[in-house]
Image 1 (cartoon, rainbow, N blue to C red):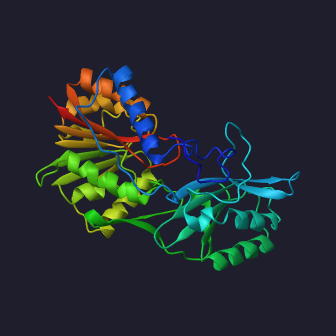
Image 2: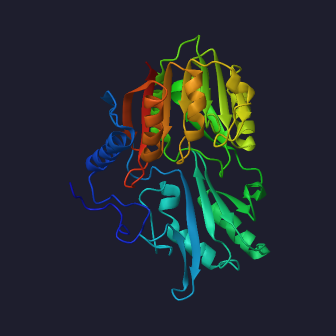
Image 3: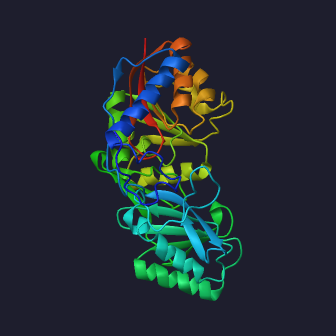
Length: 372
């Protein structure tokens, strides 16, 4: 199963840890890890193991946070990911998993920052890419000089990038070039949905797998025109707006008020009128929330790595017939599965992995639970 790594920096960079394995074996390892978690932590196995969702294995990554560090001893600026098992940035010339517009231009970015007055006070670059645009958000700890702004503008024009500056928190992002950049967006063609987002919003890194994942989730839920659906940890409405096309009513809940506002805007832009969005911290007690006093036929969960522990007792009371759980951490999925199955009478029907992050150790998975 051993293959030659596709990247010259594989032995040094910690961004990918599985390039020495064939893609088939990578997926097999991840699927075995998921089933092992179900067996040992949940004391159960799915009735059916789903076919893995697969997509491109190179230049698939459209979102990333690149570290930046001026290293005086090397006389250069490093741009990229950290070394394996180290806090130091790796010395990279290119990246085989980043979208080509950035992955093939790490040296150009390094050379650019090396010419800047602020080369010691730029710690990171946020990368966000859609079908037509590449946006780079430069985090800077000190105000940038006019010369630096001019250099960044020239770089943006040369490579047709959108460049933004961030001096503090997410609300300090301002456009440098162009002054009014076109909004970033991605399409869910199978559901006729377009979702607009800002560079620092959470979106899935792999657009092809995201489309497959959304379509699979909708199929597994078996939505009907009479269904009322609850989407927890809904973000910008990635699943919510797609499901709204196929059900009577849907409620999306997300922790960040800013994301809720954007989800509502995206619903309007897609002419969706049967979706409601609410802001609530789903990691604490939310018993008094009005949307929780309603009944739902189907539920979709897409929690962060910490899982959906606090929500399970509420889900148990709601008694939805079908639950689809999208997970980025097999350990918390298995922990939550144990509770859904043993305490709330659900059956783990289907489960499988999604190759969202080829060549890395990230295990993304999807599972279907039905009520006994």
